[in-house]
Length: 250
Image (cartoon, rainbow, N blue to C red; front, side, top):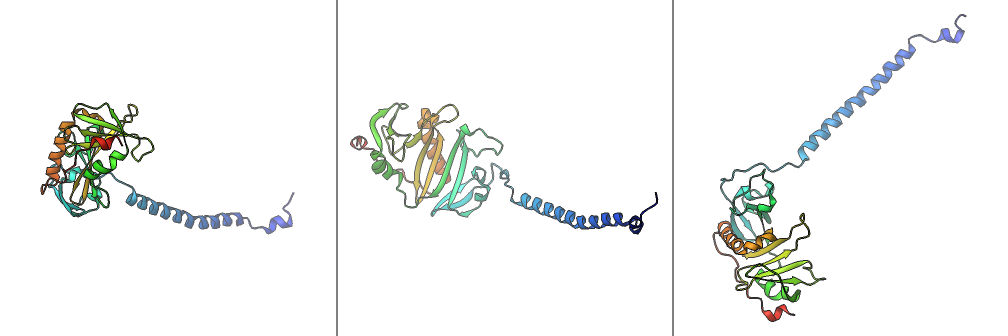
């Protein structure tokens, strides 16, 4: 059969023209998509968090001021790279190997062998001495708890701000050593202790595993030595008064 009048009127090359026009419309979309991908990749590269660069263990200490108190801090012990600068800061977070008290190596992840230290402004909080004398006796139970030799331990009552923690102090000299400790809750959740010292208007908080209390005298001595290194200008606040027995039973 021959071609109809309508079929003869349609040019044979027209479908090809449509395909070429569609390709021209898609090309700008491909270019725009590629540019957007490159832009997003660059932004992700800039904003992606990175592990702080390693710092030599023998790098000179940085003079840092927190709440008006001066400290000499080895940069390798500073946990956040943004805090590795001299001058005034609101807070500094540190870590030291135990028992050497050397700054840790960046690739070492054995957290059980770390003494963590936080230095921050005291603000309106009471000094550790006043907390031990005035605040804690309101919340502890009267009964003594099992404790390592040389320490006395009182549990904080339920429904108090310190529920689930214990207060342990040097039985002979509470002004030397007093800590608040959480309890072990299985092999993967170990109890930790907080030991506070006041230096000028700065609070220095030491955090370590509760298991270290078996050698608490060594811990106390090492913390004193570390404070003398970080703050060579003075001993800080060590005037924690004895915790009255009558107050404990209240």
